[in-house]
Image 1 (tube, rainbow, N blue to C red):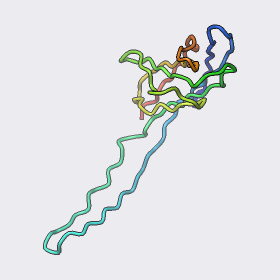
Image 2 (cartoon, rainbow, N blue to C red):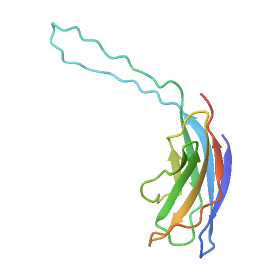
Image 3 (cartoon, helix red, strand yellow):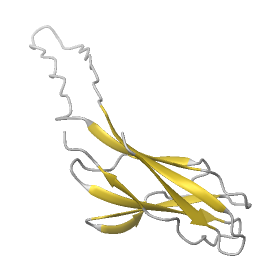
Image 4 (cartoon, one colour):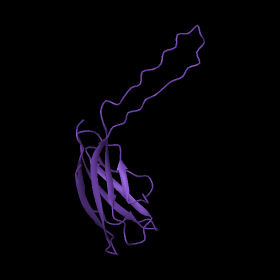
Length: 134
């Protein structure tokens, strides 16, 4: 598991935070049991439990909190489809798990601190995450 650190700087306050990235894989195995109340004249079959084709990859980001008053952080990812913001509302925690990554892809992440009035800070430095293939 690789770790990289990135820093962000709030425009006017010059407080620096650090973001680190951990790329890893989680295996999800879920056993499902189905109970049916079918009449006796029907033949009832239990559906087969299907497992994902391979590990479910995630990228875990974490950073040191800003020393300025912020309501949270926005997390951005750059990949083959361009730059997207991953969160709908500012993340109040100092970590974020991106579970929308694909195996074998490379992604780049930055964070921006969000003030109570809404403006974002300058972006952190960018970190790279290479998601392993299954």
